[in-house]
Amino acid sequence: MQTIVKAALIFLFISGISLSQVESRRYNAFSGTMVFTVDGGVTIGKTDYSQIKPDYLGKVSLDYFLPAYSKSNFGFRVFGGGGYIAGKDVTLVPAVFRTKLSFIGGGVIYSLEAGRYAFPYFFAGASYLWFDPLGPGGVKLPNNLNNVYKKHEIDYNGELGFRFLLTDNFSVNVSGGIQLSPNDYLDDVAIGTNNDMFYYASVGFSFSFFTDNDSDEDGVPDSRDHCPNTQRGVAVDEFGCPIDSDHDGVPDYMDKCPNTPKGVAVDKDGCPLDSDGDGVPDYRDVCPNTPKGVKVDDLGCPLDSDGDGVPDYKDKCPNTPAGVQVDSEGCPIDSDHDGVPDYLDKCPDTPAGVKVDSTGCPVKEEVKKEVKKEVPEVVSEEAAKVTLSAGATFAFGKSKLLPSAFPELDKLIKVMKENLRSRWLIAGYTDNIGSDNANKKVSLERAKAVMEYLVAKGINIRWLRVIGYGKANPVASNATEEGRAKNRRVEITRIN
Image 1 (tube, rainbow, N blue to C red):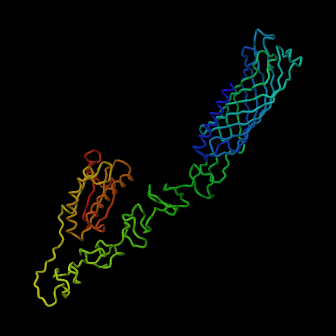
Image 2 (cartoon, one colour; image 1 turned 90 degrees about the horizontal axis):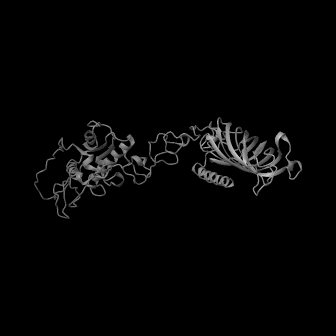
Image 3 (tube, rainbow, N blue to C red; image 1 turned 90 degrees about the vertical axis):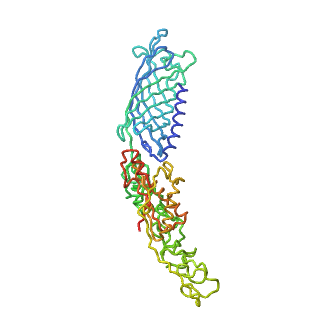
């Protein structure tokens, strides 16, 4: 029995450590409380009398548990009670005995939370026992009568039990225990080398004092409060933690941007991260590394007022006419270096050093050249909109372009370069499988992949606009696989 008690104590101790590590800030239901218990039950004596003869026992106890932010905690117990143990053996005289018991004691108690309403515990301690062995008719037994032994002693106690909460303050208990005697006279006789002891099993009721304080006054008692130090006046959820409506990790009372989209990384104030400080948050910023102080558009890209592909902050010739080819500084190219840009130069191959007029032709030389008429930009209806199926353009569930998409995009690039004043919308779509957020994300990533390919081939990013529509605007029924395949697409449309 001693081995079982030791094993139980080791098990409860290890379990308590693991539980406290799992939820180290959960306030224990018995933390800082005093628990008064009354119980009673059956005793079984293990003495020199060979046959079991059950009797009864009753006791009261008072426990105090230390404050604890875990699912386990230690406490102290004092107790007292009385009862009887009995035995029977036809080989002994008398054949039956019944010993009256009275005891007081104390020790330590270790409690665990096995659920919201169940609390196993283990107690170990010592008690001072008064006993009076009697025979049939309540007559003192011979050795008792002759004062062969002292009828009081210090015993050792162990108990394993469960408390089941019925209310926050009231619980029902079941327990079993052992009381070990250092002597062998609980039955009035000393036979053999083993000392006497007795077991008991009992049922009782407990009442807890000083339970469920609400230290931070947020309306959630400490026993259920996962955030026990919330500032006063802050709205909390059922677990006592400040409400975070947009689930960005910053509670509402500290959140300066309370409606942040789900999944967007935020700073300490709850606002979407803006790494380059251009006023456009990272999750919408197509040009995430813009230098500080540079004005940007709604996509976070530097402004390019004349649409020549060189942003304003680098453009030394900011009012270049649309469609004019420029150098890295945004100025029109002058191939023969005569001071007249190519788009105005009617004599494009003037030798170096020759003076020219405003048309780029030598001053004293009359050269008749046929002026090339400006041909208006024309885009066929077929070239004004290109649809790429996701199956042929991207790997399943991925946003990386497949080589099979390159030929169609290269045709479109030629059209874009022939129509320099045109602007294009790249729109990604998905079927209706999956969440809205996931579909919008993958559709936007695929549209961006197409944009990046076009830019890498020399298309000005200012000509392009990228949007991820997710499952919106289906072109076929999502009820069939064929329809869903058609809905997974990227559309490139000329918008002006």
